[in-house]
Image (cartoon, rainbow over all chains, first blue to last red; front, side, top):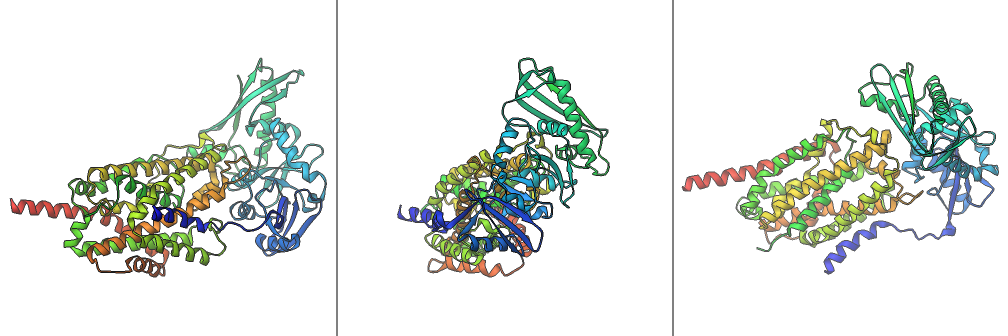
Length: 290
Length: 326
């Protein structure tokens, strides 16, 4: 029994539990990255309005300098917002996930580093979350952005600075951006499959409760069909033409921008078809309301 | 002769080692159907060993008379232990280390394994069931955390032959079924079959998660570590601490299995030998000086011989002796 316990307990010595107190750590709410070698890292902590900016050959080096400024280890596990101005390669953001412990649900936000010093930076994440739950903005986070940058189109859908609600931007890995129109944003919000229930206002002013959204993409040699199914309470048929227009606008702007943020590449790969970023196949949008 | 391990302990020990190999799979499979064929190949490979176990012919009796077989298996264990150390050095990201610095982690790990291997393979066998339970709980946590991102449309049933081949090639612990079975008989055979089945199921589960929840992010090298980063079982928080803990426990058990088995077999053949566990570990460390691909090739090449050919040759030799006597 003693041997059994010892064998079990010994590996626990390898856990390297931290002896630091909470006061010795700087819990970051938002991080902004700019540039590559050197990288400029701006950090904003919870309940603080001041930001700390450091420069380093890479992100870990810059964070070590930030730790010295903050007087404690910079802890990124609770980071809610990761700002990029397009000058940072996706590999650096990938390292934030893999090596620095940033949550995959952290929001990637297209904005220059000075944005962090503004009051709205602290509430941006809350605004994004509420807007996504209400079906006003498409869902997007660090994991989805990194996944989209891995595709052949190398473009991710990320929120960015806007008037009122954040704008939605298609951000290429080389920093070029395309801003979606309001109509395309509404369509993309549905096509990105929002979770939970939300209300949609039909053109005639009637509010319809959408309980579930499903998206299915199927590819063939001739075209790609994207089927969006909305489950509603009551008579949701009034929504169909309206949603059809929104979705077609979103898909059209996405194709013009040579971006794939709706899983076209994956669907074509399942059919053993490659996706050519320079020659998008025709995409048929089918909207069903149940 | 005292029984080495009970069937449940044998199952747990082999499965824990199998979980380690699954965690360190170098690439994500593109489909899940290939694993059925891989499982069939593994069962075929282990049939001679299971027949010997079922006939009540323990490995220890064989190596007492034919010591080259014993030393071959010891060399096999040392080679696979070196492969594990190489995987720790090359495949594992730094955030999976429990303390800063790869050197510090390595020293702590080796000291722990030296102790666990020295106290004997039976102690490792008694430790294996709780470690397996913790590993399975963490697998559930990983699944719950990653499932919110799952897109079932991405699941493909195609056959990925290279992935299936890599899966079979990584089943180094299977060759230890006969050496560790002792005189357990049919219990060990059932334990062996259960181990193969559970191992396959766990690998299929991880592949499903990678395909549906990991997407293109897990198409790079060593997808498990990316999957662990994507898993959020606690709402917005990651569960890295749990996976780090389990990962290190698996590493300790994996190395203990091979070092402990090598030490046990050496003492069976030469009871007066001392320091066999330390010698086995030292041999593993020496081998890690070789290039990683050399170790990988040597280890996977020896697997069919150790797991299949050796028991088959023993069966054939026993059958020819019976015919000669008759």
